[in-house]
Length: 177
Image (cartoon, rainbow, N blue to C red):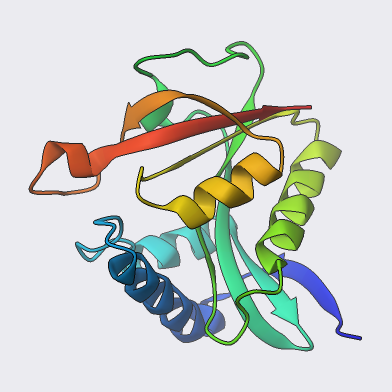
């Protein structure tokens, strides 16, 4: 039986985090998605996440198996939502960004465990509203978040650089507990 837990990332973990992100980029590319194909997220972004103590690691038997950034507070990308509405617009919310599972750890439903633990941490701190977004072609993430009870709310645009404006379009989801 494996020992699985999450912990805050440190700068020492950055090389492994970047390997996990690069693996996720390759998976997205293989799936035909333009998401994360323009250099984002890069080491500077993850370094900032770590410094802000917002980057988390999924640990399996002492190995880093995944990474995610959880931000509690308003996300500028979520101010305008098209073809829908947020259900909860008054309470604070947490967003999960840059979540990825490393090579060799796929197919074990570890993303569900990771999300569950992130949600539990925020819930402990009084957060009951959770949001996430993903590209229309990222069917893996859509399956994970809907399986966790997130509801599709509409379309947002992120400010990542992209040649095609629609490459910045994201499906927005919300979970209210």
